[in-house]
Image (cartoon, rainbow, N blue to C red; front, side):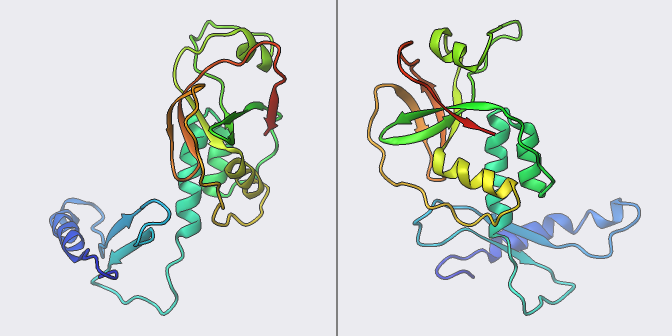
Length: 206
């Protein structure tokens, strides 16, 4: 039980589902356990947590530390959606990471700054540099991005610094240049209208 929410039923169902499998696996597992990951948006009455049932053993006195792992897994998945595979792997598994020198566009949307991955175009598309795509290209699909504050925290974590909870801005106003969704973790998914060719461009270096 976690505060007012009941999760015993889900764990019992998971253990029941596992009960028939040990005899079918070789070598036979000596023990099984079930977990229930509950991930909710910030500000919810119940914070995100992980509960588990391990009937063959006893839980130690130390609390189960998972907040950092959940945060890394969440942002790593988004880095992957942005096409940053090396950064995603390094963040998720705490691997060594070296700056790639890749430049990502920074745009102001809804009163906040977001780092955007280049739009996904056809494999035979070509452009001479990062600016060309945004100045003269055409968006061929949906763009993935991340709040600049979150992206800076991700980059610090890639450098080996602690990956604490990201203190994101909460305001977001409707913006005609954007059609899509901005999630509570600062990630963005949608269509961004191209900037005017004469406007200066800002970039975030990975």
